[in-house]
Image (cartoon, rainbow, N blue to C red; front, side):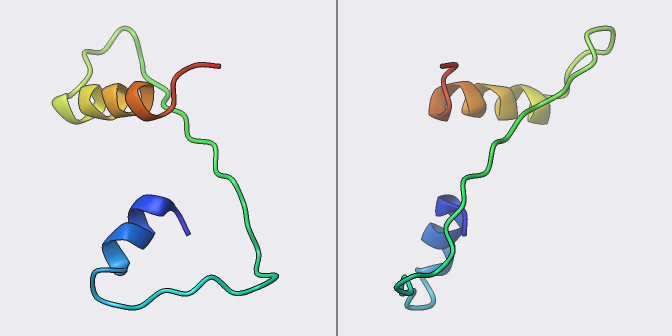
Length: 56
């Protein structure tokens, strides 16, 4: 479960990691069209991506 979702859900429900349970990593990307201006939502999303997932 993505960490931000687990943080949100854990406010209402107790979450427990199961021993031997599945684990995964999710890569997120954003594809934009340079010829079209980005919406405020897209600009915010791109800033958040850069803040929490800096280029390697």
